[in-house]
Image 1 (cartoon, rainbow, N blue to C red):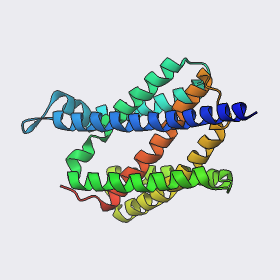
Image 2 (cartoon, rainbow, N blue to C red):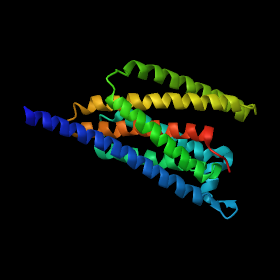
Image 3 (cartoon, one colour):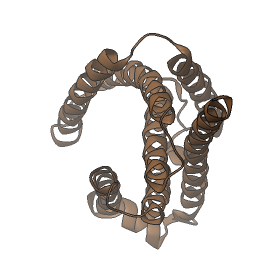
Image 4 (tube, rainbow, N blue to C red):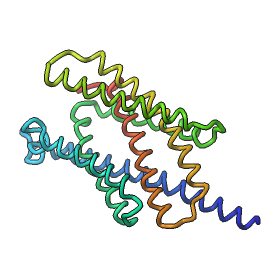
Length: 241
């Protein structure tokens, strides 16, 4: 009996370690991708060929990569049971690289000190809420559903803000600030919710390929929580160049 309990706890610990390990790897890949892209965008005072691809023609290249990110997430979410572990990892890494490229503009817009401070602040908030989600006895499922509904609302308002600012040339500074605050609240809560959800899944992990694929998807969810929280904090407190 004790051996069985020990084996279950061992698989649980491995699942959690792998999940947060995948998430950490994704953050590292995105950071390298973003920084590398930022220093290759310019060729002297001019945009490099890759910079032209990203930002010329109404930022066509940027939007192509953004759409590719959405496609990868949808494909992984809908096909995770059918694809192999290797394909899931490949998609996960590809998403991390592409997201790093699209995030490269923060190095051009914000001071490096602000980026570092925002990253540290995000890390503290993220791991605090992750710890809360892992240790709390309270069921966060209901809160998670409301947070997802609120996230849909923020996405809709963000699209509206984009139309107002880019197409109608209206000043949306206050609306942008409200969106950023709402984003911080939502993804702080989702971090706790996703962490608790991962603990529940980990309790049944048996080390199979299916659970390894679930670990990759769980890491992607945590990664998205972290990145969105980071960007919202940077939008509010980041000092621009």
